Image (cartoon, rainbow, N blue to C red; front, side, top):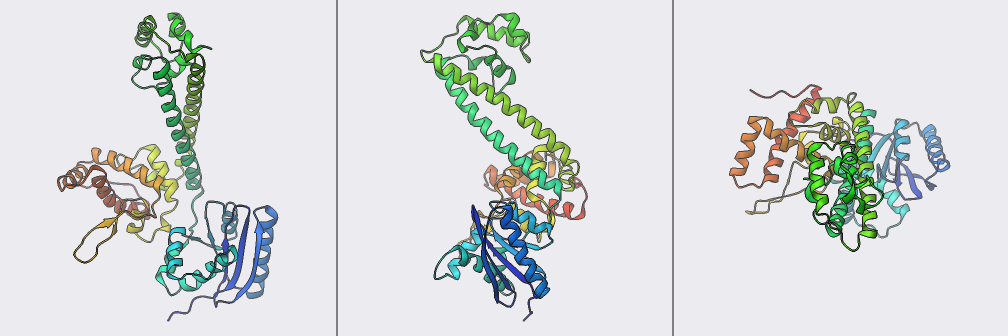
Length: 398
């Protein structure tokens, strides 16, 4: 049996305000146990005690922590800057692991020691190897894209919620106003709503004032004037009208912030090899490309194209038993990357005849739209993995 390399191993149970730490050797001996506060003083204590043992034994350091990229920040980043090997404890697989090897009790200190046990079993047991996943170095550009794209997604979701509330309030206090626009999110419509200090004054705004609103020309001005002739307001417009205008201002503000984020993302993407490679795939637009580049981070973290497909949500897991054949959706999927991938693949198949034929073939087999898109996405994952590994662009097969 292969002898595991000698290491100084550190297990960290991440908490909100403090973290429990256990340090041991690859032979199984526990050297130190302590807790640190989530403050600079605690981080200095953490690295100081590791460095003392590192000088004493001279072994390389490997750190395993639960909650990577969560409450672990910035401790996880500090670990990587010191060139220690960093492993993320997969929470979902850890729960399955604890079902197989249950403990007598559960405390934060025990959980820290459990990370050292996972290190021990990882050398011999495949299920434990899957629980500890090594964090690979990610280019700074992709780290920035990840934070920017996630921020953008949160603002987009907020804009949708505020817009839904705005439309419901307008329908209740001013029936017919929404009919002057095909989409309530139109900027000219929002600017019209916020052009007065009182919602009821919209029915008396003069044409000259309307024409001065950005985005409103002769066509929309005529539509607004027609609405003013029959405008009606509900009894609760006195207080709901103010809410409507506040929501309209909020949507305009969110739109400006989202636009600034998209401009920044486009600038950062020029330095990302993953973003530039994905941009060569037909149908992969700017936003989907940036989101995928940020969530993938580095292709080196994936052992093969099947791992990438699983991470992007384009691959199902076999769930067969006896004569019963079936599959199930995996739980260890990056939902943000999956959403971006579904949009990009659906656009891709409309631009590439071969992909469209494959999609239609799957539809003819009885698969639903999303199932056919995922099947096509599974093939694209093979191509994406290859072009990212070879650092080249996509070429349409002839």
